[in-house]
Length: 370
Image (cartoon, rainbow, N blue to C red; front, side, top):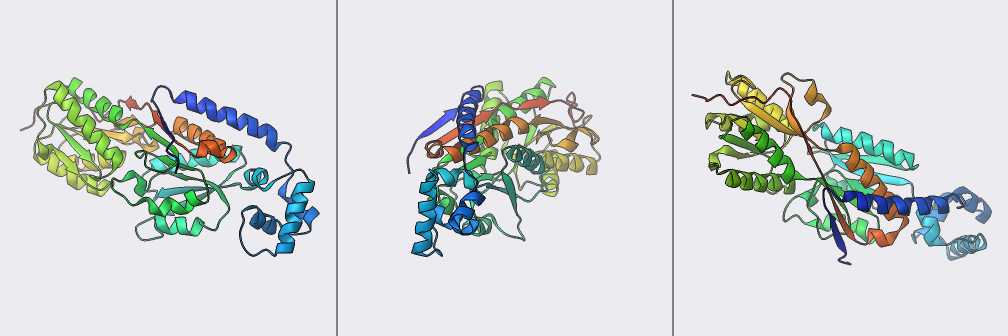
């Protein structure tokens, strides 16, 4: 595998965005002159499915039919390579279960943006009790997908076996991976700057007078979680704040797991809790209420994501917003550019996006707790 990787900083991602757009414009001009697959099939006297098999080098086509298709392409001034780019119109979008409201937001953005390029999105949602991520990748192996976008997956976990993605790389299918560290796989990696996000939340809490701040985090091996934890440790050290290990809780992402873990933080005297997701933050608010504590009068809580409901709950949640629109637009431009130019697909590009602190009602001045 060619090790050709680039990292584009949080403030410079527009360079790569512009490069992808240039590729898109060039290919759009070419596509307007392309002959439709149906026209080729009609002239060759075979089905469109047969054309697809020949283009992708798949079995099930006789040598005579294969020669007829290739001769037809040649007579029309086309090649398998050029046709392959315009023939594939399906994009696989692989996502965990939709209990986390930020995933439906990403899905809506991606489906809308991909449709503007006449690309049809196939959403594959894996759950603990249903089909796994690996199962979906196996099912997609024989499907004519042009690219794959992952909202999450085992790639975002340290020491994970990445072999399940091999079927895509072997077929030269461009991939985009969201919110995970760049791995030893070609593709586009797009992520909100998790370290900047945690630093924003902690600075906001310390500005309000909080010094005993609990960290409510996800899995210990989850790259975004680890980034947030590392940023928090640096922040505490820079501020000269002692942070006891009992004020860090690692748990599964979810409202109920957040509630249980937050209770432990509150029992250890935390006056504020910085959470790695909005779901964990909602769990922390429930834990505080179950202990007779008021948010934000007794406890301040911050989240991460800023999914749609966070401005309508009571109290409304102070959280760090992921720029869903910017991430989605850049990923779609990148995917289309990679589909049209495999030289782009044969490298690793990493985009970091600046988060935004949204201050609402769930944070307030520190009130010492008994």
